[in-house]
Amino acid sequence: MKSKYLAGRLQEVLLDGTWIAQTNLQEQLNNTSWEQANSKMGNHHSLAELVFHVDYYVGGILNVFNGGDLEIRDQYSWDTEPLRSEEDWLQRVRAFVMHAQALVDKIMHTPDSQWSRPFVKEAYGTYERNIDGLIEHSYYHFGQISLLRKLLQGSAHQSPAAA
Image 1 (tube, rainbow, N blue to C red):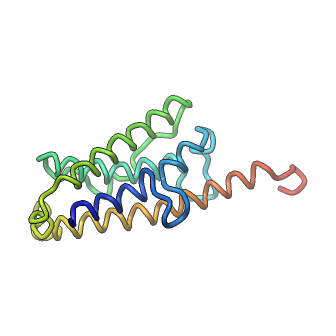
Image 2: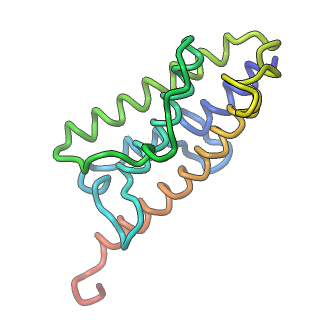
Image 3: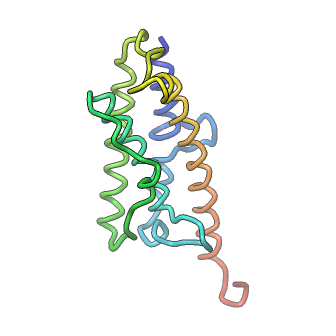
């Protein structure tokens, strides 16, 4: 029961939910051009950087669910190059969606007894705490992405005199 609940919450924010904001991260990304994704406002991260960052954690946690080690490190979670083309953007979005769907599937099929066990090592908390943290982290950056998209769309619609 817990597996279904956690998988559903992660799927909702990342892939296909509409409960919180009538949209989800995948929908926002699918409606974003590569030029928008690469754009920066001030010293804030670009949409492309934010997607890389979220996918970095999704992929790292997926690796543990696949029996691997926890190889991700916070210091590397922003290490990405700017996009060079539409294909770069589409590839980044496809990778994110593939990793997100794979993690949702793994969570869905995780025995409920696993959720209270240590995630890799005790210092990292339980499996449940890590998935809850990933959901919260995803909502945080989803909010940034939604706001940044609105700001970028607004600045594109301003006339040169208003800008």
